[in-house]
Image 1 (cartoon, rainbow, N blue to C red):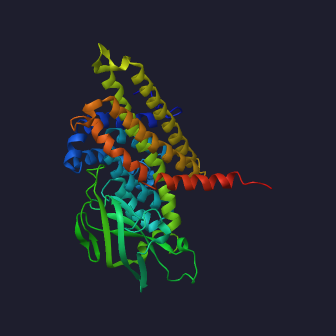
Image 2: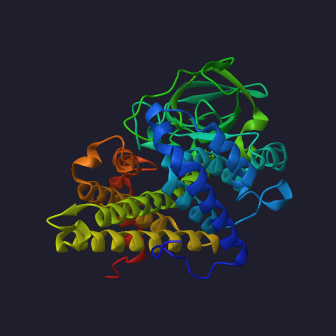
Image 3: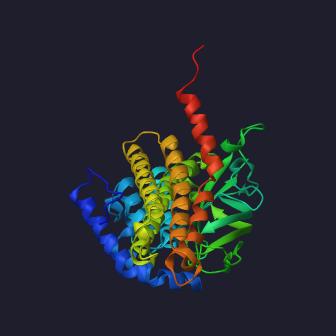
Length: 401
């Protein structure tokens, strides 16, 4: 274990889980990540290995075949996995958010149907809020569900589905105006539907098309897709929680834990960048000594290490707050904002330490340099986080005049 980003107060079980995941990352992910990433190849063997470790069921309750662990344990595992290759943490995160939403909001039948198979990794989850024209403005979604007997007919186009092709269960947020009086606030007329589908691309079930992978700058290996619904018929028992109009709250609850996850990813990528930078600085010599002996480089390493430590502490705090049953949107927003910004800065400093070699695809830092920007926009941009933080601060510090 590295000296940085230690977490105090962990149980023996938590330490054992983390040690197992870290060993897996060091032996099975880091040696192959860059090669797979350059080929934009789905890491099937890595995913199969994580299934065997039980990572897909980490937070699913034991009664459904999961490990019943805390958000903190999960976030620390994500930190380790992102340290190896951030794309793998994305494959797990979308699955985890759907499982979390089912656990918190699903009907008993929905939990019984999906959670045991999700814990085993047989059913793989993805979730979808965004659309091509709206970005972070979730209240403006236009995808729609219309009731037709004991079914709903869904139409619309969704965007930026991580795991869109490989998943077999997608939680999709759409507008469901039926039964809601005229003038109802947009967020109160949204519903989450649980859509089962075949993995792959093209028409994966009648009325549902996954066009193909979006070609991205980084965050490769994991498939990011669109989702097109055209007369897609979904039975009423696949409304998450059994009641329409609750979708916005369900998704926001999922995104809250998702933001802790993105913070954890930022921590993991930053740790790896620091490891690469501090290692290279001791091997590379200029002017008769290792560049680590130059004060300019030591200052960079000092700043990088401080940022790694600070981001980790905020991420752990946000996870622990949620685990205690308290509201954590302020802490999760702060952790996500700080960790993603610091991650970008630490990666850039490591890139600078590598000099010209950082620009070469042979060096791992080149991959990290393309991956870090995704964290600035995933699960809500930095600007969205600052809006959330600002509003919550004004609630907490309301002027009493």
